[in-house]
Image (cartoon, rainbow, N blue to C red):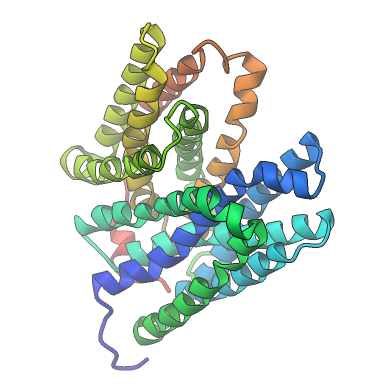
Length: 385
């Protein structure tokens, strides 16, 4: 809109936040409802695994397709489009009548979820500059608390309303929030500028940075995936569930602070040191509470890379940054999703040997931190919408 005042950082933040919150809500709701869906649709273990893989595949597809469209036609427009796709997918899941329809609508919803991370972080990064960029990016990752909402709904609402209503109920707030998002974007959307570099050239120019981001995302998200193993060690009460999820918040703020003080390399290096030290300490400990301690401390550590990836990935890429940053993160999420399978194949899932796996992840991040590309902040001085 011509002559409109620039949106405030708070408005920019909440416009990006609301989509990611439901991203995490849906992602973890499927995790908590895996056995319920398997029983209701009479899924075999193999079919249940394919259902989870369909969700991961949709996330990767959404990051690529909608990321590309966002770079060509505007982040704001695609932020609204992903809400429409999300509502269609969730509505379909809530009325799924057979296995095929469940898979199809799961794929559709996941496409929207995969699009949200790249678009929201790029939208924020291009509008909040300087030192505030990493702080706001870390705050944006507070959307992971959508997983806490999913845990509470699965624990308390599922026995009352059933799984279909858990999905259907999210349509109402998403529809209302989409109106708020539309009004915010209508008042603050700058003119569209077409990318100046062809897609093949952009990929060729940034393939090293993309590969680095992909591997870092894979290793750090794999560490987050390990929380599934340790959550069962927590006392099964609302208090510990809240602690398990909320502990990631101080880690994300710590990550933003470390980047400001030590840079991205220093922040990743300290995260790797902390993860390795915690893993080795628990591995060598004879305490019966070692898994409980790990379950509560691991989210704090994982908050560090989760809080810095959004801003850092965007600073590494110029043209097509939405697609490249979002694809690196979400394809890393897909690879990390196979870490439980890898644990089982290596026999590391029993007798505390999974601590060796997280220690290895720490060593891997430490080695990569030395090769972290230096970002080009000049790329973000002007919006590329």
